[in-house]
Length: 208
Image 1 (cartoon, rainbow, N blue to C red):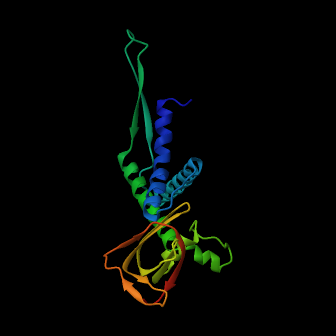
Image 2: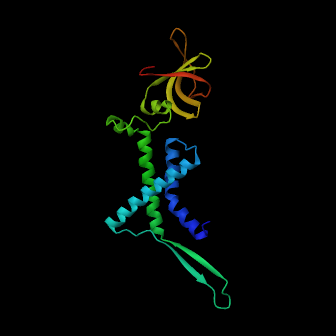
Image 3: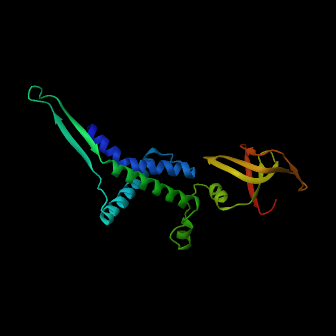
Protein backbone atom coordinates (compact mmCIF):
# COMPACT_ATOMS: atom_id res chain seq x y z
CA UNK A 1 0.00 0.00 0.00
CA UNK A 2 1.36 3.45 -0.86
CA UNK A 3 2.02 5.84 1.98
CA UNK A 4 0.28 9.22 2.20
CA UNK A 5 2.97 11.07 0.22
CA UNK A 6 2.91 8.49 -2.56
CA UNK A 7 -0.87 8.61 -2.66
CA UNK A 8 -0.83 12.42 -2.98
CA UNK A 9 1.81 12.19 -5.71
CA UNK A 10 -0.29 9.67 -7.67
CA UNK A 11 -3.36 11.88 -7.24
CA UNK A 12 -1.53 14.95 -8.56
CA UNK A 13 -0.32 12.96 -11.56
CA UNK A 14 -3.85 11.75 -12.37
CA UNK A 15 -5.74 15.00 -11.69
CA UNK A 16 -5.22 16.53 -15.18
CA UNK A 17 -6.70 13.42 -16.80
CA UNK A 18 -9.68 13.32 -14.45
CA UNK A 19 -10.31 17.00 -15.20
CA UNK A 20 -10.15 16.40 -18.97
CA UNK A 21 -12.56 13.44 -18.89
CA UNK A 22 -14.99 15.28 -16.61
CA UNK A 23 -15.10 18.39 -18.82
CA UNK A 24 -15.52 16.28 -21.97
CA UNK A 25 -18.47 14.49 -20.38
CA UNK A 26 -20.07 17.83 -19.46
CA UNK A 27 -19.60 19.36 -22.93
CA UNK A 28 -20.60 16.30 -24.97
CA UNK A 29 -23.17 14.58 -22.79
CA UNK A 30 -21.29 11.30 -23.17
CA UNK A 31 -20.86 9.30 -19.97
CA UNK A 32 -18.34 6.56 -19.23
CA UNK A 33 -20.33 3.76 -17.63
CA UNK A 34 -17.49 1.45 -16.62
CA UNK A 35 -15.22 2.78 -13.84
CA UNK A 36 -12.15 1.07 -15.29
CA UNK A 37 -12.67 2.79 -18.64
CA UNK A 38 -12.90 6.13 -16.85
CA UNK A 39 -9.54 5.42 -15.18
CA UNK A 40 -7.97 4.38 -18.50
CA UNK A 41 -9.23 7.53 -20.23
CA UNK A 42 -7.98 9.68 -17.34
CA UNK A 43 -4.53 8.03 -17.55
CA UNK A 44 -4.37 8.56 -21.31
CA UNK A 45 -5.45 12.19 -20.95
CA UNK A 46 -2.89 12.80 -18.20
CA UNK A 47 -0.18 11.30 -20.38
CA UNK A 48 -1.14 13.62 -23.27
CA UNK A 49 -1.16 16.67 -20.99
CA UNK A 50 2.27 15.86 -19.55
CA UNK A 51 3.77 15.17 -22.99
CA UNK A 52 2.55 18.57 -24.24
CA UNK A 53 3.84 20.21 -21.07
CA UNK A 54 7.29 18.60 -21.29
CA UNK A 55 7.62 19.56 -24.97
CA UNK A 56 6.91 23.17 -24.11
CA UNK A 57 9.33 22.97 -21.17
CA UNK A 58 12.09 22.10 -23.62
CA UNK A 59 11.02 24.66 -26.23
CA UNK A 60 10.27 27.67 -24.04
CA UNK A 61 12.22 26.86 -20.87
CA UNK A 62 9.13 26.64 -18.70
CA UNK A 63 9.32 25.52 -15.10
CA UNK A 64 9.56 21.79 -14.82
CA UNK A 65 7.08 19.90 -12.68
CA UNK A 66 8.42 19.67 -9.16
CA UNK A 67 6.98 17.79 -6.22
CA UNK A 68 9.44 17.89 -3.33
CA UNK A 69 9.20 16.05 -0.03
CA UNK A 70 11.08 17.59 2.85
CA UNK A 71 11.66 15.35 5.88
CA UNK A 72 11.13 17.08 9.21
CA UNK A 73 12.50 15.37 12.31
CA UNK A 74 12.41 16.29 15.94
CA UNK A 75 15.36 16.83 18.20
CA UNK A 76 17.30 14.03 19.83
CA UNK A 77 14.99 14.02 22.85
CA UNK A 78 12.02 12.98 20.70
CA UNK A 79 13.52 10.80 17.95
CA UNK A 80 10.25 8.99 17.25
CA UNK A 81 8.52 12.04 15.72
CA UNK A 82 8.92 12.40 11.95
CA UNK A 83 6.80 13.89 9.18
CA UNK A 84 7.05 14.75 5.49
CA UNK A 85 6.10 18.10 3.98
CA UNK A 86 4.88 18.06 0.37
CA UNK A 87 5.87 21.08 -1.72
CA UNK A 88 4.29 21.62 -5.16
CA UNK A 89 5.31 24.35 -7.60
CA UNK A 90 2.13 26.51 -7.99
CA UNK A 91 2.97 27.77 -11.49
CA UNK A 92 3.40 24.20 -12.75
CA UNK A 93 -0.03 23.29 -11.44
CA UNK A 94 -1.62 26.33 -13.14
CA UNK A 95 0.03 25.48 -16.46
CA UNK A 96 -1.13 21.86 -16.23
CA UNK A 97 -4.63 23.10 -15.42
CA UNK A 98 -4.60 25.34 -18.51
CA UNK A 99 -3.40 22.51 -20.78
CA UNK A 100 -6.09 20.21 -19.36
CA UNK A 101 -8.80 22.76 -20.20
CA UNK A 102 -7.45 23.21 -23.73
CA UNK A 103 -7.24 19.46 -24.35
CA UNK A 104 -10.78 18.95 -23.03
CA UNK A 105 -12.16 21.66 -25.32
CA UNK A 106 -10.37 20.21 -28.36
CA UNK A 107 -11.65 16.69 -27.61
CA UNK A 108 -15.18 18.01 -27.09
CA UNK A 109 -15.07 19.82 -30.44
CA UNK A 110 -13.79 16.65 -32.11
CA UNK A 111 -16.72 14.69 -30.70
CA UNK A 112 -19.46 17.29 -31.24
CA UNK A 113 -18.27 18.19 -34.75
CA UNK A 114 -17.51 14.56 -35.65
CA UNK A 115 -13.93 15.13 -36.75
CA UNK A 116 -13.69 11.36 -37.26
CA UNK A 117 -15.38 11.91 -40.62
CA UNK A 118 -11.93 12.92 -41.88
CA UNK A 119 -10.57 9.51 -40.88
CA UNK A 120 -13.60 7.82 -42.45
CA UNK A 121 -12.92 9.61 -45.73
CA UNK A 122 -9.33 8.36 -45.60
CA UNK A 123 -10.58 4.82 -45.02
CA UNK A 124 -8.85 4.51 -41.66
CA UNK A 125 -12.05 3.78 -39.75
CA UNK A 126 -15.77 3.26 -40.14
CA UNK A 127 -16.51 4.28 -36.60
CA UNK A 128 -18.02 7.42 -35.16
CA UNK A 129 -17.82 9.22 -31.83
CA UNK A 130 -21.51 8.70 -31.23
CA UNK A 131 -22.52 5.64 -29.29
CA UNK A 132 -25.91 5.66 -31.07
CA UNK A 133 -27.18 6.94 -34.45
CA UNK A 134 -29.63 9.14 -32.51
CA UNK A 135 -26.78 11.33 -31.24
CA UNK A 136 -25.08 11.73 -34.60
CA UNK A 137 -28.28 12.50 -36.49
CA UNK A 138 -29.21 15.44 -34.29
CA UNK A 139 -25.66 16.80 -34.09
CA UNK A 140 -25.11 16.79 -37.84
CA UNK A 141 -28.60 17.79 -39.04
CA UNK A 142 -30.40 21.12 -38.54
CA UNK A 143 -33.87 20.34 -39.91
CA UNK A 144 -37.45 20.17 -38.78
CA UNK A 145 -38.28 16.78 -37.29
CA UNK A 146 -41.43 14.69 -37.38
CA UNK A 147 -41.76 12.32 -34.45
CA UNK A 148 -44.10 9.34 -34.36
CA UNK A 149 -45.04 8.52 -30.79
CA UNK A 150 -45.78 5.08 -29.41
CA UNK A 151 -49.54 5.76 -29.47
CA UNK A 152 -49.44 6.51 -33.21
CA UNK A 153 -49.66 10.31 -32.98
CA UNK A 154 -47.22 12.46 -34.93
CA UNK A 155 -45.59 15.74 -33.90
CA UNK A 156 -43.65 18.15 -36.11
CA UNK A 157 -41.32 20.80 -34.68
CA UNK A 158 -37.86 22.33 -34.51
CA UNK A 159 -35.46 20.36 -32.27
CA UNK A 160 -34.18 22.44 -29.37
CA UNK A 161 -32.70 19.78 -27.08
CA UNK A 162 -32.23 16.04 -27.23
CA UNK A 163 -30.77 13.35 -25.04
CA UNK A 164 -30.33 9.59 -24.94
CA UNK A 165 -29.60 7.43 -21.92
CA UNK A 166 -29.29 3.73 -22.71
CA UNK A 167 -32.66 2.91 -24.36
CA UNK A 168 -34.46 6.05 -23.14
CA UNK A 169 -34.82 8.97 -25.54
CA UNK A 170 -36.17 12.46 -24.97
CA UNK A 171 -36.64 15.38 -27.33
CA UNK A 172 -37.67 19.01 -26.90
CA UNK A 173 -39.41 20.77 -29.81
CA UNK A 174 -40.11 24.42 -30.53
CA UNK A 175 -42.99 25.66 -32.70
CA UNK A 176 -44.48 22.17 -32.44
CA UNK A 177 -47.66 21.02 -34.23
CA UNK A 178 -49.73 17.85 -34.29
CA UNK A 179 -49.78 16.15 -37.71
CA UNK A 180 -53.18 14.80 -38.74
CA UNK A 181 -53.66 11.77 -40.96
CA UNK A 182 -54.46 14.02 -43.95
CA UNK A 183 -51.17 15.90 -43.46
CA UNK A 184 -52.60 19.11 -42.03
CA UNK A 185 -50.95 20.72 -39.00
CA UNK A 186 -52.53 21.79 -35.74
CA UNK A 187 -50.33 24.08 -33.69
CA UNK A 188 -49.84 22.98 -30.10
CA UNK A 189 -49.35 26.55 -28.94
CA UNK A 190 -46.58 26.05 -26.40
CA UNK A 191 -43.10 27.58 -26.27
CA UNK A 192 -41.53 24.17 -25.85
CA UNK A 193 -42.95 20.66 -26.29
CA UNK A 194 -41.13 17.91 -24.40
CA UNK A 195 -41.34 14.30 -25.60
CA UNK A 196 -40.23 11.72 -23.05
CA UNK A 197 -42.44 8.74 -23.93
CA UNK A 198 -42.05 5.96 -26.47
CA UNK A 199 -40.74 7.13 -29.85
CA UNK A 200 -41.23 4.85 -32.87
CA UNK A 201 -39.24 6.91 -35.37
CA UNK A 202 -37.98 10.40 -36.22
CA UNK A 203 -37.93 11.97 -39.69
CA UNK A 204 -35.95 15.04 -40.73
CA UNK A 205 -37.57 17.62 -43.04
CA UNK A 206 -36.14 20.78 -44.63
CA UNK A 207 -39.48 22.56 -44.41
CA UNK A 208 -42.30 22.53 -41.92
